[in-house]
Length: 130
Image (spheres, rainbow, N blue to C red):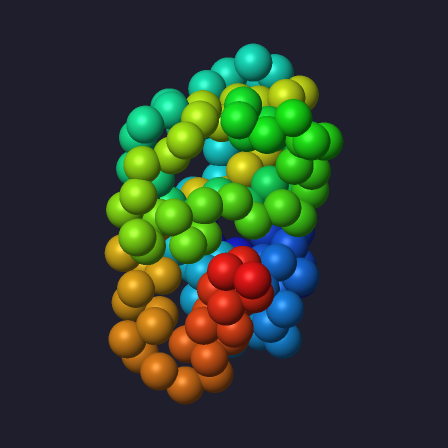
């Protein structure tokens, strides 16, 4: 999916990664956006996530977490997809939703390029580890 600087996807990516542009634009260019109905399975339990998932609209729920569902702007599996660790639980559409999948290989590619996009990515991963 190609995204313009003002697209809904790019705005959500900027907010999720606390980035002013270079990382968000790089990820918007490789993200795959899909729509899901409530109850759809987005990730199986025990599967190693192969992408980070950004909730654009609606909500998703990690079935191991009894807290509130993840709503718009939530960035899920960003570190897990890089570690190839199996997911503890399934991820399910809590309500009709739109999500952007950002493949781990593209996150790794951004990290390898260095510069501002890589620094923004490292900062986001560090915040998620805290």
